[in-house]
Image (cartoon, rainbow, N blue to C red; front, side, top):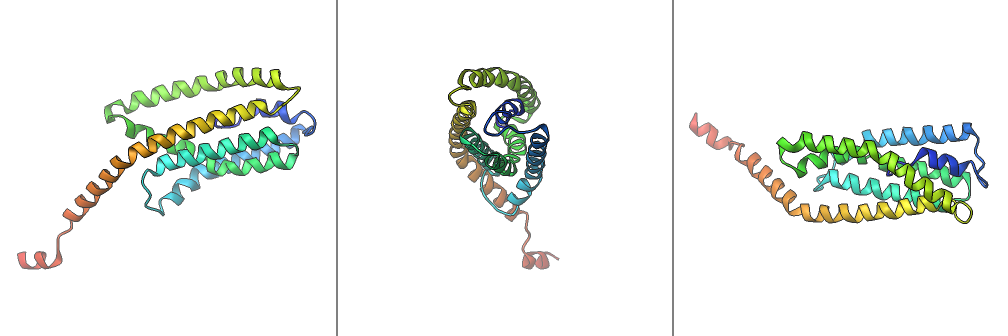
Length: 201
């Protein structure tokens, strides 16, 4: 759901007032895909320049927030420009996959990591099918009075996810602070003072 459902968006933009051609939709898909891929690469690299706690969690929070914003914009859009502008959110959404791959293994013991990733892969395989079934039904039921209502519902669901992830982020902060202090202590204990080293020699 976080990544826009291409089939649902295709149905929306084929209708008035957009009336997109297949060529226009291809350009939009290309722009969104390129920006999303760029975000997957650049976003984690940029966060290495700062010393914030829970960087992977922040990537998830910002990415899903950006995705929710794009859903809300699409739900209210009346022009082609407004739809194309949502592709810019793809850069921020690109932080979601690397964020989850880094964040989830830290939530379980190391010996459970493989099992967790397997469960996540199964969920990700079934989610598109369930999402298509639910949101296409909503789209068909609301097509006459609000064609973008399915995207509005999707945006609300993502806001709920953001709130949940934000709660987890707050709960995890004490642990991250403790890990940071322990790491700092370990690094300082491994540094041998220059004066002591000379005296020992």
